[in-house]
Amino acid sequence: MPVETSEYDETRAPDGAPWWDLTIQPGTKAKPFGQEKRLAAWLWFNKSLGDTFTMRELRAALGPDIADNAEHLNRRLRELRKCDWSIPSQRTDSTLAQDEYRLKAKGGRIWLPGEREKYKKFAPSARIRRLVMDQDGSRCRICGLGPDDTYYEDGERVRLTIGHLVPQERLKSRGARDDLSNWRTECSRCNETMRDEVPDPEQLDEVLAGLKRLTAKEAGELLDWMRKGERPRSRVDQAYDRARRLAAPDRDRVTGKLAERLGETG
Image (cartoon, rainbow, N blue to C red; front, side, top):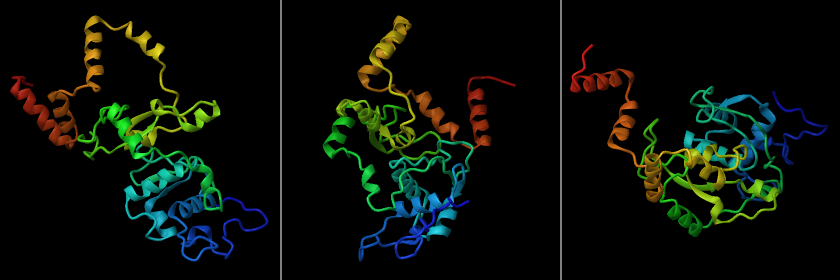
């Protein structure tokens, strides 16, 4: 259901066209209006909180140029999330279908003049990105995957970016500074789910307290991982990751072959 409007029609731009139909910025001759603005306006006025939508529905409403594939659409949605919109996909909400998204929270009305600028944040330079990835060994500090790895679920190659341990907005509310120590390497999927609702990372004293419960063998194993900057994956880990992506009948055949090799029967 469309959001209720006031005495004038908020859904329409100064020229009378719906905001989501615009392609040129009002008051300019050729400046593109932007897909994120069109998408935000359409969702604001045509979807209520909790409603779902699909890429097909968006393209029917906004035209075929709005999202030509899932990756393109997800980039647009990531831009909206930077403006306080919350739009989960199946990746973060298992109740959704593969091509389905849910409008969980409406954020900034970025189609209005001056609104988009309110959400501009500090963007790290190429030098900062390089320093962060170097200090982290070019591996995601959340899931441990690197640029040469693939995701176990679907075999898609890992793409690395950098993100905050503590979100910038939370730091500002505390009067704290953002510095290099607050950045970490994240893969694109982990970065997608790390939003303001996540808790602050654990503090050093909390981690050290947990170390006291480790045996000498466990502490030695952890020391080795810390020095390497990663938890090594064995050949068995790698073989399992490949086998678990097979179809169910093929997984059964792998299980049978392993049992046969080890002399198991029945």
